[in-house]
Image (cartoon, rainbow, N blue to C red; front, side, top):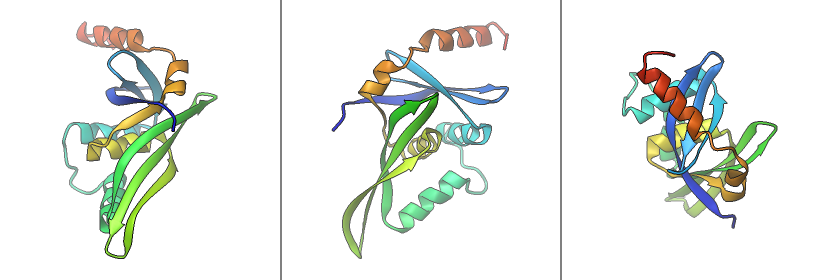
Length: 151
């Protein structure tokens, strides 16, 4: 089994083309870009807000629960040509089957949206994490500009 680094979303910042997601482990931060709608879904969950109607990620979780499954964790497993790849790990157990673990190919953005809703951990394969540039200085600069009243 590959060594993993546990991360969490530390900032979601709107951009002209979507939303920048910063994931960090307390020492380093990485960034990738996602669709605005998924960024809004993640922000809603992180803020503890409940939309008046279920969003797609809420519907998926309700469906999982209906089948006796839950989100166990998400793992970002690779990056190729600036595209991140992740695996969503589910655990299912119900009256018609013994415990089953299912691993699904998934976009990291969807994994984050599901994990923040369920307080499930998010990991990055350590080898991938080591290859990625630390974007903490960029995040700090963006935060500094925001505090100063700029964009």
